[in-house]
Length: 130
Image (cartoon, rainbow, N blue to C red; front, side, top):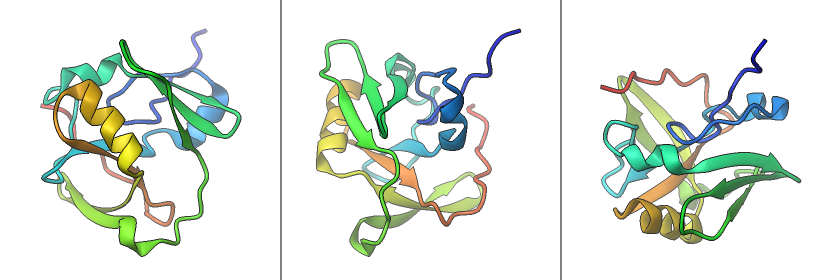
């Protein structure tokens, strides 16, 4: 029987680590206009591999140094909190900062941000990629 696969960053690589279930689709990538980048808009997302290690989301991609993002940070800084549209749903997100944005933008070759779905947010209804 195959282990279930989880996608901590929507549309990026998958992991079968059981602890990743709690973080399935907790992050997403959006362009600088605030539009969610799915696999059909940005196929290179699938080249980003992810795993959970020692309290961090670890991202790797061809030609890039590893990027570690803390898994459980208390989201109390409203200056990095935004709302974006995912299909017909407004989603509260937290920007993961300049370093993560530079890493993603560098790899994907477009200006973009790594965003975390706010922990107080109800379940996200992810639109199907076109």
